[in-house]
Structure formats: C-alpha cells, structure tokens
Amino acid sequence: MKRVNFKLVLPACLALGALLYACSKSFLSKPPLGAYTPTSMSSRAGVEGLLIGAYSMLDGKGGAGTNVAGAGDWVTAEDNWVWGGVCADDAHKGSDPGDQVEIVPLMSWSETPTNGWLDGKWSWGYDAIQRSNDVLRYTRLAKDMTPADTIEVTAEAKFLRAHYHMDLKKIFNQVPYVDENITYAAGNWRVDNTVDIWPMIEADLKYAMANLPKKQGDIGRANFYAAEAYLAKAYMFEQKFADAQPLLNDLITNGTTSAGKAYALVTNFNDNFNASTKNNTESVFAAQMSVNDNTGAANANAGDVLNYPYNNGDVPFVNCCGFYQPSFSLVNAFKTDPVTGLPDPDNYNNTDVRNDMGLKKTDAFTPYAAPSTAGEAVDPRLDWTVGRRGIPYLDWGVVPGVTWVRNQASAGPYLPIKNSPRASQNGTLTDKSSWTAGYSALNYNFIRFADILLWAAEVEVEIGSLDVAEGYVNQVRNRAANASGFVYQYADPTKPQNGFSATPAAHYVVKPYPAGFFTGQGQAGARKYVRFERRLELAMEGHRFFDLVRWGIADTELNAYVQHETHATNGTGSSFPYTLLNGATFKKGVSEYFAIPQAEIDASHDPKTGKATLTQNTGY
Image 1: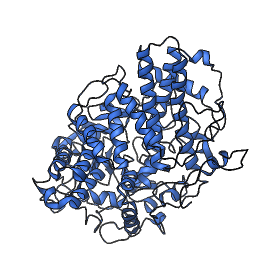
Image 2 (image 1 turned 90 degrees about the horizontal axis):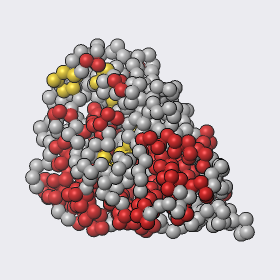
Image 3 (image 1 turned 90 degrees about the vertical axis):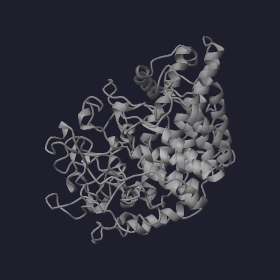
Image 4 (image 1 turned 135 degrees about the horizontal axis):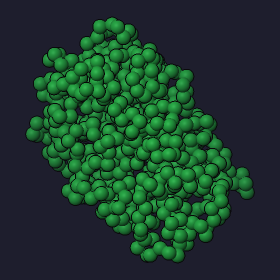
C-alpha cells in the first residue's frame, strides 16, 4: 500500500477524528456524528486516513473520554500515570489535596462507580476501538486496494484493537470485546462483559504477527515484532509462561524496530526519556508525539501536562502543575549496598532516604548519598526518575526544594522527571502556542526492550533457568552501571546550561548480581529480585499497579505501602505522613480492578427486557 508520511498525516487525521467521533459519553449508545459517508471513506485514501485516526488515539488524546465529567487529557493519559502509578506505590497524587479530587478514591481503592474518571477512561477506550473497527469495515468496501494492501491494513487495525482492549482489560477486567460487526446501525451494540476477552486479544495479535512486515515505511506503525511483543505481554498477564518464552527469545535474538534496527538497550538509561533521542533501538512500540505543527499541541504529550514542578517562585521552565509526586517508598527502593551495589528488596523501607520535608529553601541540607557520603549509595536510575533536593534536574538547575513543590506538606518532597522535557528544548520540542510549555514531543514507550529482557527473566524464573534469568537482569543492571549515564553536577551551578562537570551528583553504586546469585536464592528469592528490578527500571512509567496485580501480590505490597507512607519521615527522625492514604485498605479479590462506570451500565439496559447488559465488578 502506498505509504503516507506518519508525522505529516497525523495532524490532519486528528481533525478528521474530531469530525467522525463526536460521540456521546456512553459507549456505542449513539451513532458517530459527522458528514462522512461510506462512499468518501471506502477508498485507499479514506481507509488510510481512518487508520491514522486509530493510531492517533495512542497518545490518550481525543474521543469522548476527555470530555466526561469535565475531565482533561490526564484522565486518559497514554502512560496511565494515575491508574498504574498513583494507584500503586510509585507515586502520590501530588498538587493540593482538592485538585483533581476524583483521584483520591481511586488511589485509596475506594471509588464508587459514579467516579467520572472511570467513565472517561472507558469512553476513550471504546472510541479508540471503534476507530480501529471502522478501518476494518471500510477496508472491506474499498475497491482500489490490492489484496496485499487489505491484509496489512487489517493487521494494523487488529493490532491497535488489541492494544486498546488490553488497556481496558488491565483496568476493568470485565470488559466487552467489540469487533467490526458490532455497530449502532446493526442494533447489536449492547455487548455482554462476562466473557474473558484474552482469547480475542490473542487472536487479533496472532493475525497481526502473521501479516505485518518486519520493517515499516513509517516509524510509528506497528511491525511484526511489536505484535510479537504484545502477544508476549498478553501471555505474561495470563501467566502462560511456556507460550511467552519462545516469543521473548525471538524478540531478544532477532527483534527489530519498525525502522529495521536491532533491538538493544541504549547506552544511557535517560535516552529513553528524551524527545531528542526517541524512537531509538530500545523502543518496541511507542505513542508518537509532535509539537509546533499548527495543531495547537493536539499531537503533543498532553496526558502528562500536569506532571511538572510547580512555580512557587523560581521554577525556570515548565511551571505546572505539581502532580504525580514520587513516593517515599519508591525513593527508598533505589538504595544500594555501597560495597556490593545490590538492592535490598526485604528491608529498603526500614528507614527513609534523607529528604527536605519541613525545611525552607534557605535551610542547610545535604542530600542522601552526596558524593562524599561513602556510607550511603543509590542506584543512578533514581536521579533520572525522581527530582530531589540538591541534585541537578536535567538542565533546569539544582532542585532547591520546597519552592519547586506545589504543596510539600500534603504530597511530599519529590518530583517526577521521566516525562519532563529539557530546558534547552523549550520552544523546539515543547509547544509554543499553549498555556504551558508542558506540552512536549516526548514519546511514550508502551513497551521498550528492557521490558522484554525483564519479562524473559520472569519466564526463566518460573519455567526455565535461574542463571539465564540472572543474565537478563544483569544486562539491565550493567546499563545502569555505565558511568556515562550518571547524573553529574553542573560545571557552573549558576548557569546549568553550560553543562556538567566530571563529579557524579551522588554516590552511585550499582553492580550486576554475582554469578550464581539467583541460583543461591532459589526460585522464590530469584523471583523477588526480578520483580524488584522491574520496579527500579520501569518506575513512574505506569506499569507498577498492573504488575502487582498480575503477580497476585497487590494486597500484600500495597497495604504495606499504606502503612509506610502514613508513617513516613524526613529520614532524620521527624514524621511527615502522607495523610491522603489514611484508612486506605486494598481488598484482595476486589481492588485489583476498578469499578465499571455506572453510566455505562445504565446505558446498557435493554429496553425490551429492562435489564442491564453490563455486569458490575465484584465488590462495587
């Protein structure tokens, strides 16, 4: 099929999507509004536009979801920062307690089915699924497409449909599977949600694997290996380790990006979170972002626009909005033994890393693991994940403490980094036309090669070799240990734009596990270390809650987290508890999945029987 440049077609397609999908908030309850006709869409050009429209939903922006209950793009953010991060032990809500207050019951696992965020996420997901299905419907009608064109477009649409269904499945569990034969016009849109949809997700991904090329003309399109990685991911959630193993082995040995570059860990960890080094060899599949393209930031990373330091007087760049603050527990996890360079999964929360809770900007403060503090050490990934006082924050300057935090007393001292642009990218890789420079061109990697390696390590722990698992984990740790990827002090702290010195910003010590370590730990011990490595490597990327659920340990880990955060300290004896979690309890068998939106259950009532088609999750 003749390829249309991905970056050029996207802005136009977003406009098309706005025309085609001005839907009501209840999934499939009304036909799409707009002026398009089957004739205008039933062509190669029409189908291509619809396909890019389906891709465009990957950034979490668009469709009806962001308009539900006055919600914004952060509800449907591509990285699931609330659902996967704040609702786990990665992060606090941040900001002021009453800002985006709907998050509080979500993160304390006490939401009701009327919480507007639930319907926002649900509506967005089914809008995206319907876009994928429209591609399939109109592909059948197009007369100017070759059989080969039709097969590949079908494969891409089914891949996207699987992605969107999987996202909803992870959050709500009991969700309907909606294919291209289900439409408002056909009158069959009230779909039952009591059937497990993993087999249908698998089938879509297997079709995609069978029919997608290994190299694509447009870098943002899914290729064979992206589909293979998603199928492996589905198997990991289903605990089908024997099925996942050959896929992961193939991805590690033969996998390539859509541009044809062999998968590999990039040299520096932080290059995965830099708009100028995106679409690198570690990117398996990503949401493509762009700015300054005459769309008013419509193609930017809008989902993270709240998640930057807050301007209480001296933030030099992005000044909004103080959400998604890393937890005390997460920071503690990055402590390492200063001799062995290994983490301590059992005892990391016994003491809190020294922080500046309760201090003014002018008060003296020495960061934990300052370069001269030989008795303290941290994993260098900490300071590419978390902004903390006394440490350089990208090229913005040294974090001064409370003046970069919106409400330290409420949400703690720490700042998110992975989603933040560089100060030197202001106006080039951030949008010039919006109310904040927080709209950036930073892609979000749904799967990166480190995921593949750590999934492979999990599989080897469960059904294979502990030594092989250790080797996969050590690839990730060896990259972290590369000194070229450390955070360094500024050459001139008063002018951070002048670059960095040769002095590390903290005492960084991270080393691979010694030969035979996993075997010596046994299966249970090796499993614990693999899971902990995943926490360190992928922190603040929206995976943590879903990992804890698929591992079956969410209740144990998150109830312990509540106990810790509600008794947190500044690391020197003063108590600074996170009170928004007071009384929170993760209920095993209930809290693993969120409530089905009541608005969707109400809309699913069959007028003939008076009964709802959708069934509420257990416990709500």
